Length: 628
Image 1: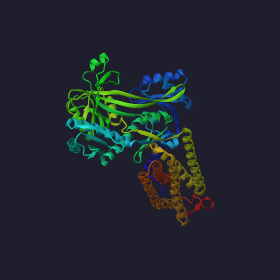
Image 2 (image 1 turned 135 degrees about the vertical axis):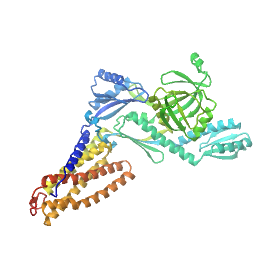
Image 3 (image 1 turned 90 degrees about the vertical axis):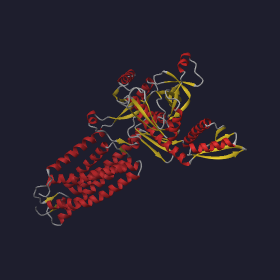
Image 4 (image 1 turned 90 degrees about the horizontal axis):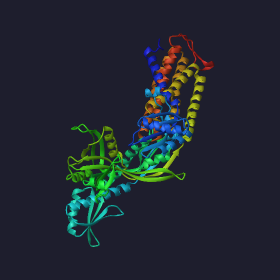
């Protein structure tokens, strides 16, 4: 029997189709309007959930379900209840919690248990917010120049070189004025030796010896690149507070960052979180602070702070180091004591500064201060008013055991979770440069749903037209192709869900194109079978020859298209990638369904039988052939 499959091939096909159907199922259940609560330094637990559920019950707002993980998610029955619940929850919580509107997948628990999750929908389908942010690179360079100016002032003082003033220039860089040419010349040699990245020019201005100092071109480019990359890292961590699935955060050009948050409905809250600026400072604990706290009088060199527990502490006013010099921070375990620790890596300049400033402070206590500039919205006289506040808190204190340099560790932390949080703050807690939102675009859920409906209609209409055409032209073989086409769509959706890929409108276009390509393979096979029958071959031999001889043509066409899709994915961005992903997956699945699946069905229908005719279209719906 030439048209026969071994049992293992039928088993393989059934397994693939069964698994594909199972993992495509989650996309049928839709999403629930939800309010989520997250916190960077507060606890999310069952007590918080019970309190929020109680607050909503008092306002007669019925909830669908509540979940606690790293965030609190409260599902509601309607968007109207969602908006009411947000207002109630915001009024019940303080500002250390972050609340946001979102859409949560309504996938049943038994599917999520086997990691069967719906595919992500892009901004154009799900709705959400789009921000185009501009990084103030000039501000980043100015901050670096101010830091250099302070460092050089200290360097000259330590080497007993007298200078009158250090003044910034509006055109960039700064000018150091000296009392005489001898001090200027000594400073010139010292600065060039210690800071080769600076461009130093010795000159006389108004009969006064001066040094003009500029950042070198390489140093400037490095500062600008670091500012953009550090801001991207920081924004990613802040987006995690919103719990957004598949956010898009990427660089655009030299100084801009694109942020897309699918599913986020609260634009104001998103702007508050993304636009917050923060800095880190290392300060020494004031050694005479105990008496000052008791008397309430601060020493002239001290400044009062509080730790995260609200305990007051007095630190030195002079800043030892800021977080801009940190290139990496990782949590771990200190080998000698086995206690949690954070391992810090500084850049070259930061390492030199820290080494100099900790050399004479061994045995003293150092503190890490986290300073955040927050924006928030309050209801004042019935209107939403934007407010700003500065939060300064000591997140860690530790004793300096050795002179610190490029790499050092911070110990004295309570647990590994605290160490991990501190590493996160040190690594990406601060924006390296100010950012401005220069473009804001909101895609409402209704518009996103309209796009989904239109895209769905395009797939359905194209799909139905193909089904009708195939059934009319190829009869039984056409119905087999239609069944294969149906499973092809199921497998594409299942793969998108398994890969947790993001479906966009161009992605839907890729699926529509896949429908046409899948049918094209079957058309080639069926036309080859009809040609073999017209040449006088038996039906069984025609089926065998049709599949065998058409395979190379189908493979060549699909491989060349797959190469084009891979190139589109590699060199394209955004929507082009979405189109390339669905097209690539569709090519792979269509090769399976259009060849292996249809051949298996045809073998089941016609294999092992003595045939006089095949229902494959033609005159009077069939083409006659000699008996097998």
